[in-house]
Image (cartoon, rainbow, N blue to C red; front, side):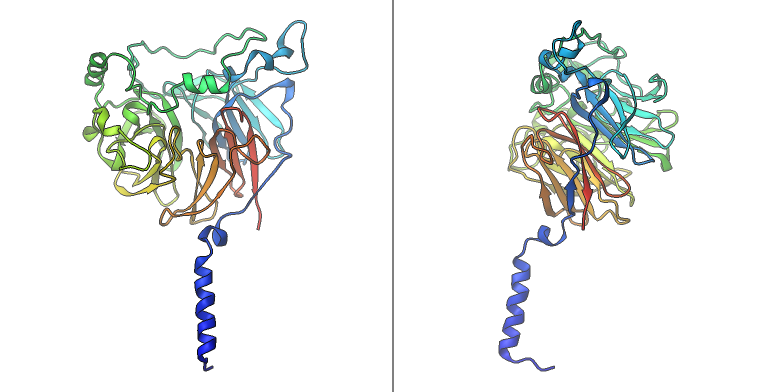
Length: 410
């Protein structure tokens, strides 16, 4: 077929118009808020901030929450006699099925980051990673850690904090600040006496083959019998342990550099939003790994994600919303459920977006959500998990304090 000049110009104009349409408008995953999940909590429980979220082999959801976020006025039902219908402090670990019903729970010390293996054992990030039997709530193993913190406090196994009925804490924002998950960059480097910190780092250099800071995230590679932990020490270290023995195997820092090359100089973690990237991880490091063997380490306080192999070989850096200030943009990392895991799903606690990125090149193809306490929006978007069908689960801190579900639609 021979085209005249007018037809050629028309086709060219149509092509340019198509290019002008944002990529996300053509390809972004589509998710619909499910207002009927979960069902109301039993026993008048009121969730605290969500600090861990994991989908098990049956596509049921484990929720780790922080009951100490609750305030006095939220706990009237605990008093004798009750001074209100709501509420009661919940257990830290709650198991919810696909229909939204609570099917199990147990109490542990509060934590941050979690995973569940194919046998149902739960791994919770605390001052280290501990393995729990979900039937008894007992610890059955733990990753080795340093015996002291950077401020000189001896480390002892955490205990469940005794709870006085009707007595709450500082509230979600207060707890969030006290926990240090703000602009300090993790690892305690901005606190305490400089000489004491230098002495601590001399005793526990970056190569220390155990957990030294707090845990931000836990991931399990059962096929390789490995446990990945994001240790907050020195802004963040990717640490890999044997899943069976918990013996240390390997680790790395920013840009995949070996632990021996990680700097202890605070200047190497200095970062101004929109400016040059720091040489080391800035803080609040989370991670996940894809089916094709790539590790995605999200350095939230520097608005970036570092992609490496499982051996730590650096591949590329993905920068997301670089203008984002305190809190950072790159939180939890999850993947779309297709065989190629075409998309990265990134939870953003500051902008309260769920970002969709093309995994092949790291380009943003869409976003969902805004700061709001309305259903389907976010107020402290903290945790994310995706089940085998592509259903997305989110968990919020701040004044969100809830889990939500988003189902894929065509």
